[in-house]
Length: 179
Image (cartoon, rainbow, N blue to C red):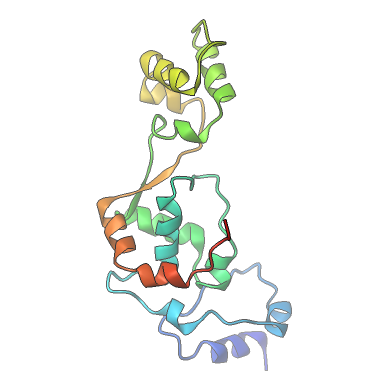
């Protein structure tokens, strides 16, 4: 039986067929395949999949940004294409991309100092992170600041927070790191 037929058989009872990256080595994966659980491929009341809830949960930490790599578990455990689902969450109003000023917490103090130095601001050596942020707000516009760096954070909208709060069972089943 071909790899594609075996996968089709594996997922025949899933409401939504899991995403499989075209780069995945199907033959090797099928040797030890752990199928995406059926429960992760059932649409929730909002039309979202559990993987979407996990994306919202990750955004909620305030550390998910445009340069954050997508964990393989989005594909292998939740059956979604992380980047494509992020775009859909943004388009559907569950999350938004932060402005340059809102994304300042994603760049280093050195980068902030270099931006201010390029703008001709003096007295930077004694400035702490909060002082640097204030100086950036004082001396630059959003458009001007945006031209210096491309990383942007993601944040939840009220709709995204509501979807996350409506599905604690998804988060409860997700493996957590021990702190």
